[in-house]
Image 1 (cartoon, helix red, strand yellow):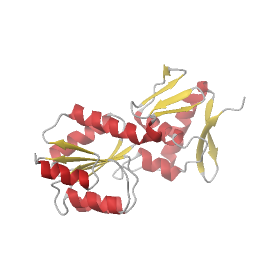
Image 2: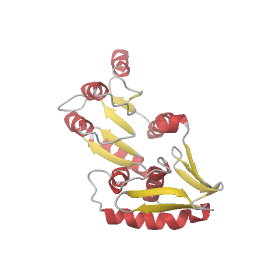
Image 3: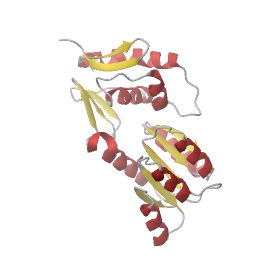
Length: 224
């Protein structure tokens, strides 16, 4: 899953980025409202946005308004130092899904992130499955026949991207978008390495990742 953090306080933004990355999310981070608006206008796919209201060059309310006017329905958690009912109402009316007043607990933010992602994933069902292989997209856990499967963060993100479209081809470009933030350098060769590793780890579930030459990859059950 991919999260955009729009926060101009560098210390807080760094803490949020570390927290989300450690939870297994690919994280992009910007420090102005204009940067956030530009990225979102470009159609960069995100599963959730953490948006500060008091951003320079364009405030968070404007970013949020523009986002919803483009009919982008990505969940948004609004952050603000203003403890005002009017501001909270305005944010919610503009289309925010949740609201946190600074200072806040990182544990509370993480819980709210999980709740919003649980609500948005798979029609409210966060559990993805293919054969004996299961993936909890909110708890960030994979298992085979209910036995935990040890995967790296990149492998978890790759597995999630494939299982969200189980039975359908996912291109290398789509996988790169899911696994890496825009500030990270990555190549299609890196995807091939992770596919190779993941393919071996999930084989006991009777599941494989097939390469569709020139198109991408597809996760599917092995033939009986």
